[in-house]
Amino acid sequence: MTAIEEVDSSKHAPAPTVRRLPGYHRLAQRLLGEGAQTVSCTTIALALSLDPTQVRKDIAITGIVGKPKVGYEIRQLLESIESFLGWDNVTDAFLVGAGSLGTALLGYKMFNEHGLKIVAAFDNDRTRIGVAIRGVEVLPIEKLPSLAGRMHVKIGVIATPAEAARDIAALLVASGIEAIWNFAPVHLDVPPEIIVEDVHLTSSLAVLSAKLTQKLKRK
Amino acid sequence: MTAIEEVDSSKHAPAPTVRRLPGYHRLAQRLLGEGAQTVSCTTIALALSLDPTQVRKDIAITGIVGKPKVGYEIRQLLESIESFLGWDNVTDAFLVGAGSLGTALLGYKMFNEHGLKIVAAFDNDRTRIGVAIRGVEVLPIEKLPSLAGRMHVKIGVIATPAEAARDIAALLVASGIEAIWNFAPVHLDVPPEIIVEDVHLTSSLAVLSAKLTQKLKRK
DNA sequence: TAGATTGTTAATCGATTAACAATC
DNA sequence: TAGATTGTTAATCGATTAACAATC
Image (cartoon, rainbow over all chains, first blue to last red; front, side, top):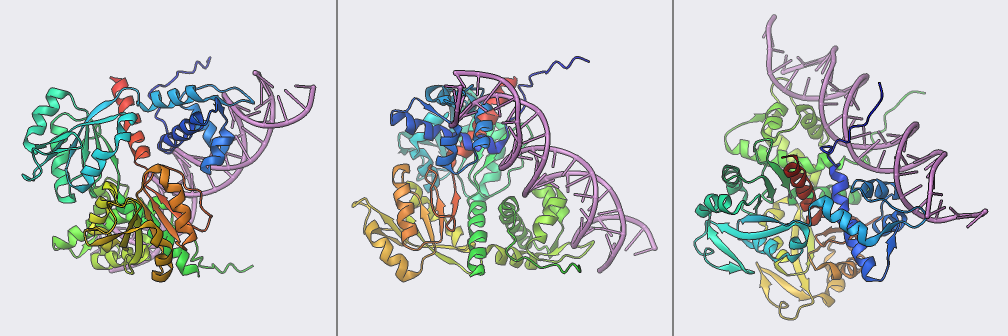
């Protein structure tokens, strides 16, 4: 049987690889600003304390082709990562929870350059509703479903207390959202076709604590 | 040669396992509140969409012993996780960067129950200095080194803009800090004995974007 | 040219999942 | 007792790392 390789475009990129790509992008931007034209995996690996082969494989997944002995054209590398991550077409998002974390997230102008545009915020606290935070208006949560449909919003960002998060997730799903960026410390039980990415600060803190506990125990 | 197993207490727990432990703890707390006395891996796995064997192995690392057919004593499980993660002896921490993210972090009372107590905040912005945010005073960054030594502070939390983060990391290391919880989107190049745990929102967002981009492409 | 670097295949490592005896 | 669940060993899976030919 002649092996004709089917290029499986649905093949998922490993999450660890995807997580590292923004770091490469940031470094490439800095180097470009410093006047560099090209960059090699060795340079990237050294700057970010990674293995050069790993960097090469990670970068390869974006589809860019480098030149032996030279490396990658920086502008091309930037574009390649941007298009792979979908940073070139910005997706509208709703933020739910306009507390201090929500406010901090609204302050990240960075997100706009990374494919995410928060177009409205929602809360159930009357004192917060109507106010605009960093140019984004805070609306009553009741308005979310109809607005989500009308504006074809695809991403919901949950920055509510834990207790509210489950209900909010259900509301987002019912409103036709496709992906949830969850900052609440709860497991969201949503249908499998809904994408969920958790930012669990307690998990991150747990890794820090466990390592520190061990380090101090060794002394 | 008789194989006497040396119990290697320096054996590190896998990071993925450590990341999942807080979720088990949260669930166990909830179940205890609902009147349950014991919990099985099957129950936990079902509630958190995980594999029962994985849950069992994760829990085993904390040293707790369960009862076949019954599961684990919930109170014992809670204590076991807490002591493993070092949540029972709270470590003092300094926060650097009293902007909106820093303010949000100061608002997480939760951290106090998770081994982290932010005892002071630092900034270089004169308008922020002197003010107390949620009961924690904001001090000029110059005071950090001497205070860190005097108070034996072990953890530094970096919530500054990216540009400042490298210098702050160096300052923290020079001040005798042992671990850094880094929220700035930069790679910190610190000595190997310093523990660094990164919370890179851009990496998390990248995973979400990449998955969503793929999902939408499939349609 | 010589040698650094890419692209790619193979080997290793570590985490997840499966299998199953022990046990309450 | 019967059967659900633990604890543990083995098999699988996937990511990282090593090896090496191709090439600018």
